[in-house]
Image 1 (tube, rainbow, N blue to C red):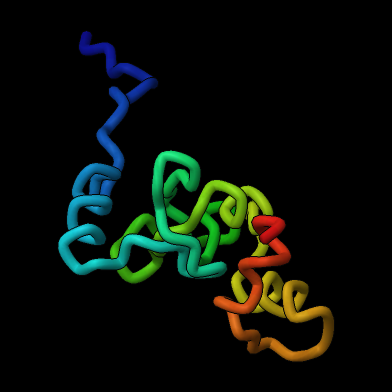
Image 2: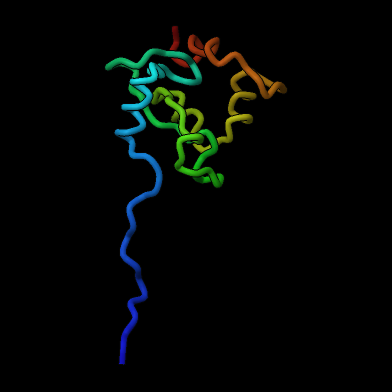
Length: 108
């Protein structure tokens, strides 16, 4: 009699590692926030944002990743990109000048 385990071992996450994402962004000079254009520094911590959040069916793939500062990433949370940019623009347009949002987000 053979007993089959009910639980499978955990598999490593698919897609690029955080380290490889940051390394490539540094090489490509994408070293500022996608949304507010703040340059990353010890005071502006870089994070990996999922453009389409994982909670909304987004994938952990290169095309769905963007560099974001901690503040923008927290504010965006699991909101879809179009809805979040619309809220930043203050209303009905799905497009916004993301670099123009820096003063509102970082109090500059």
